[in-house]
Amino acid sequence: MLSGFCPGCLLNTVLETETSLALGSQIEEYELLSEVARGGMGIVYRARQRVPSRVVALKMILPSHLNSAGAVDRFRAEAEAAASLDHEAILPIYAVGEHDGAPFYSMKFAENGTLSARIDNYRDKPREAAALIAKLARAVAFAHEHGILHRDLKPGNVLFDSAGKAFVSDFGLAKWLQRECDLTQTLAILGTPYYMAPEQATDSRGVTGGADVYSLGAILYHLLAGRPPILGETPMEVLHRAATEQPKSPRLTNARTSRDLETICLKCLEKEPGARYVSAAALADDLERFCVGDTIQARPVGLASRAWRWTRRNPGLAALSVLSVAL
Image (cartoon, rainbow, N blue to C red):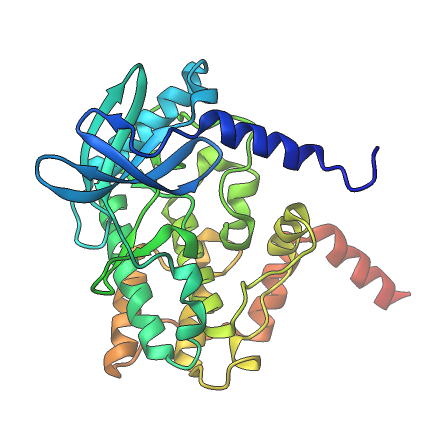
């Protein structure tokens, strides 16, 4: 291979050149103003809508996916999921349409970016961090009540508008609880490893609302500790460690974190879904109790309980440990 040659970089450059629409292009009643972001399946533009006259975010499927019926169906399912949820903390969808055979949808343009760029703002303000996650948990609970799991909650999918109001966005990996079909790829690991529940890496189709609770806890942990709960050199290492290791106490890196808030956070990050909050609403309730100084419902997990849970998850290693002690 030629020194300094990056095939992946070249491919990305080619794809970006081939898939970006010219700024100023007209997509039905929308004029494209600038590209905001792109992902594996779609591209988001800042656009101007004619009627009503306003700036919106316009998400379109990448042309390279138009020949894949599965990709088109998944994109439409994402739009349907997001459009079905009318909640003050879920980014509102304005319209769903199609242009020259390519599906798209328009939504509120959140001009103040994502939580990823604001994480450091919360480290010295744990109560504000708790209040933010409580609001997001209420939105997630609303989605669950309407039969939709998000499955990709992370700082990059929390957006802020000009007033500083936060919104849950990007239901690209959403799952309808009451439907037999799941339009996401069967063999794909769905989610972002740093914020993904352990069970989601092995059974993305069988996950429950507990996976979203875990992700909310992982975001809270990042706000408090300044880093995700589990780190690793590769995505697979992160997933393995998330399944086998306990996150360190966020108080070790941030003394401003109270024991109660740490307890709430770590309860969300339990390996077993049944050991987490029973719902996103229950998590929101406890965070709101914390914010007003009331007694929280969660209780710290003792060393004995953690050891027992580890033994249940790792029976082989536990047996070897007992054997080595006996010898």
